[in-house]
Length: 586
Image 1: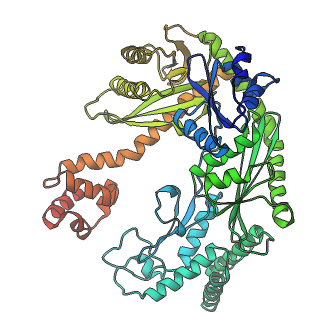
Image 2 (image 1 turned 45 degrees about the vertical axis):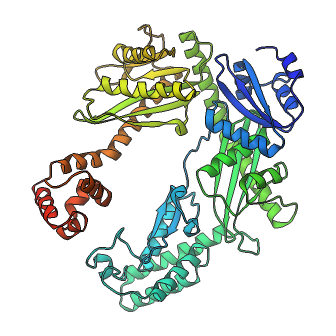
Image 3 (image 1 turned 90 degrees about the horizontal axis):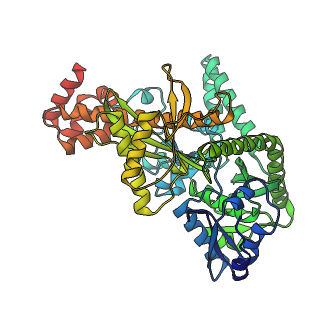
């Protein structure tokens, strides 16, 4: 480690953001501090372990930017993190976004589960989040079962099965009054906010009719539904004597690990909880704030955030522009303490397992670093292609930091239509990926992991040489049974890595993940690609009509199921008849 004594003496005691750099000048960590000098000194004047030791060992230099306030330093910190994605900053182990239930604001509303909430212009019609996806689906299915909402994506010409089983009002044919729809929406919204009075009354009435008609199976189903609602609401109820809407956060720190607990309170009900345990650098309060910002980047900010004593109330309020409170006593303070207790209990359950996993990963990294004679090794990128009988090529790139997937950095690539083989596809993906790093001056990995031996490594070396880049490469070579057999470096030498070792296991996990990612991406676009090629062969369908059909139906299967009348609404009668004939021949 370098001696920064002289440089540290020149650092001001003002607020600001600091950036740690490795020997290549790459930013590996971004932080903020009320007192820059005190915070920076803490890295080099105390005994450090775990993730902090890895960071300090990797630091070759540091920079800092003084700001006029702590809020400015936080905004700068988050901006730099998003720009450089430093490998030592908080990496969310659980990267999923939680689903919400949406009651659409259409003339004839529908109820559905949505995940990508940032695309929604009007977030007032979203209810959640639902950490339990099955509970969200069950709720949507139940409401759709009881209330005759519109079930189809777009109105059809004639009533369908849902109308005949009394689960739709037949909006496509019938003239439904706005008052009837508004009353139905009012009851559904009331239920989604925690008031089950109206919906339970409807279920009881339906249960009574079923019983009178001797339909005991249906009556039992409805009775179970009532019991589910009652049990769920009892479990969710929080004794706050109000219908408050807020998120509540607390945390627990122990031996280089940080446990974070979030409670989602809606209308006085505990909708759910979220917890996560992370490797920590010991700057706990700052890490919790950074975590919250990353977490809410994936979802909707609550109206209010309730926090523990240790966090900066003003800073969070100014950054998020929402109400932030720090209860000192009463029921809300007890709930904050309960969140901390939950974080501690989760830590007790998982810490030893996480610690063992971290130790195994670090040991495997060190083994690979020494085998490749690298000064530093943290970030790895791996690539794979997928295609259908030599057509519709796509590529995928996955990124692993210290053998942990960093899914925010995964990338998908559509390959040029004139590419007809795997090597050409791989060349295109590699060139596009690393040309971009040069143009944007963004991070480069410490290692490229290729799925293959001499040929694949040779392709990667060729592309890197053309861009004047020097990045180490290894290849995972498969046997005739398509199982990984051995590991080769970029000098085409076989590395001494046992198949029974943790290093071999971690590398094959990267290989399996990039293969899964590329295949999944290909499956998602394959139907649209096949449909697009098929449409090119139909007389009268050009680019404009093709786009309209793709937008309307999305897949060949759905188009084959469409009626002639439905096709006419998109492309007109003459062309629709030709397309209808083509489809019938498939």
